[in-house]
Length: 268
Image (cartoon, helix red, strand yellow):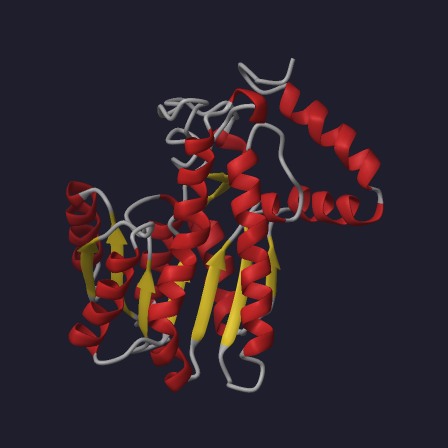
């Protein structure tokens, strides 16, 4: 990974921040993006204090123009792009019948269209360098999760996009990784949107029992180096994918029961 130029969207917290440290400590040169300027500055200071070569750019992945500027900035700073990690994401928690459609659209704009825009503008450089495109998807991209309409829909769409991209680029030497963490301790549930767009504030799940963002990042780093096709993390995650493929009616019941036990579950 030494001297590879890596762009990480949403690199100021959670899995994105952990990925910045993981790739950075192996010698990558980083450009991270984030919407919050103070969080961006704080993360950059931490990375640079650790001896990691990193730059930052305030950007919103849901805006096409920001993604164009992001690709241009990476080339201006480092002269190339080797790896794009489409990490920026947001979740939601509300039953479909109660959710404002604009909330679902906001989740789709960030999780799905954000990845499309970033990939569109970085792809020419990545093709030239036979690099990697990494999509941070989710188990929710294989198995729909109740109360997460927009999130699951966006991750299913992302998985389909990455599969198409992998097939179209089969003869180019470009590597495409679909990385699907299970439940990972991060701030994504705290920032999840409610039915009308407010932030949830508190996680409804026990974060202490989850895989850490740092462990998740190590798995994704190794999968990128080995140029794997798909990465599905946690035993629970792999079981959910397997059951949904081979015994979907049982998966429906098990998933319903599991999510009905969450604190303040919207399932009644």
